[in-house]
Image 1 (cartoon, rainbow, N blue to C red):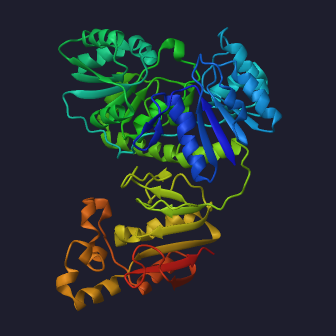
Image 2: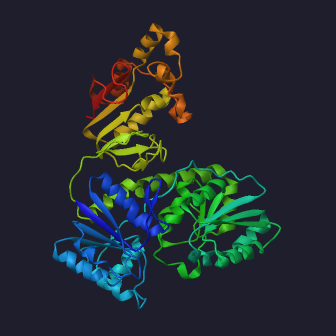
Image 3: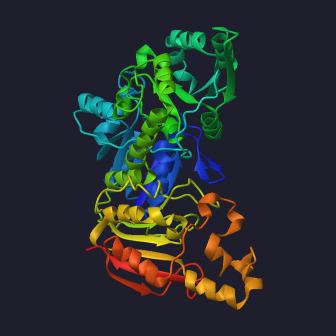
Amino acid sequence: MRIAFVTMAPLRQGPAGPTSDFASARYRVLIPAQQLARLGHTVQLLTVPHGVATPPQLRDVACDTLVLSKSYNPGNEQVIASLKARGVRIVADFCDDHFDKPDIGPHFRNVAALADELVAATPAMAEILRRRTGRQATVIPDPVEGPRREPRFAPRLPRLRIAWFGHPSNIPGIIDRSPELKALAAHMPLHLTLVTEVNEDTREFAQAVANFDPVRLSVELVPWSAEATWAALEAADCAWIPVSAMDKNTVKSANRLVEALWAGRLAIADSLPSYEPFADLLPIGKGLQQGVLAALADPAAAEKRIREAQRRIGRDHSGFAIGRQWARAAGDTAERALRLNLGCGDKIIGGYVNVDVVEARAGMRPDVICDLHNLAPFADASADEILSVHVVEHFWRWEIGDVLREWMRVLKPGGKMIVECPNIQSACQAFLENPREGSRDDQGGQRTMWVFYGDPKWEDPLMIHRWGYTPESLQSLLAEVGLKDVRQEPAQFKLREPRDMRVVGVKP
């Protein structure tokens, strides 16, 4: 299917592909487009800036579906009508409520009336669309962005480090909640990092916040970028997401909350409708001081709750989950086999959903980031095939059974599990034949020492081998976890036979 995304946000080329300083473009256009391309669709990205006349060539765009993202331009209505006349499916995406604005509201209503499918970023936005237009909208949440980090709440007291990040339009939340900040500063020294646009107003604001308590509250203003946000969260003990009184019932998405949790940080947030899925885990609506003191009383419990929040994020906000929802909205009704490439590393395989625990390796990003001990993004009996290439040897022998049983949970009855890994028997024979060559740590040792311990050039504990298998022991292991018709087949990846081996089994 040919899918075109139209956005008013400026796009630019980044090291890993197109990017934007606008969160709406990254969450509602770029990440969905990337996932749709991985599903096999042809995707175009088109920019029509706000206030600029709609280019005539947009009417001639070759596509089956056009996704109109955050449109403020009335000229787009003529494009929609022209494309609809050619049989193009129109999807209109709404992430803000501007129906009451006289310069935008009529355009919003016209777009909603013309579109074949309405998409909303939150349930609250979908309800607004229902009330304003009488139409139902499909809710597709924002995908998670940024690196996943291990949950950590271990402040180096006495000073607590707090991160706040966002557009300057979110600053009124800090102003409304400033008594909470002052109260906590009276209780313990604080360092507040503000990651936002740096201009005269934000500089004055940062200085005003520092003046709350010049002795016990220090403030650092950092120019916004995605990378600066992630660095600030990495350095912080917790993230603070205050909300102004006028924003309490807005349609804002949970992207800031999700990003902080994905970075492994305790998020202390005011209440918003989109935060409710995490209300049982986080101090939402409890206030800054109460949230911090409760976490300090039991840091291990705080980290456990962050871990559970990450599991939910992996399930509901992964690029994989979001991409499939966008595919359905775009009109893709094809039933595709779900094939998982678990522990993909830098080997991204077409036709598979590539899954790994790290956000990138050698510049290659997986489709889904999750721990292979817990495949939370995938439902029971949902995968038609599971492929694992040089992964099982990275687990301890005492844990591998539980890991494989978790993979079995996801595999459909009749589905195939394919496991390739080094053959330690072959490696031992090769080593004994030539110990001098076989003991090298470079390419000379890839059939011997690399099999025993892993490739040292990665300089990464995750890449170390923790157990070795022969064809017989690997077949026994797969049979032990419940696979049937377990058999050895010729290896198809890495160095293949005789260094490597491939064992296949079927879930009954």
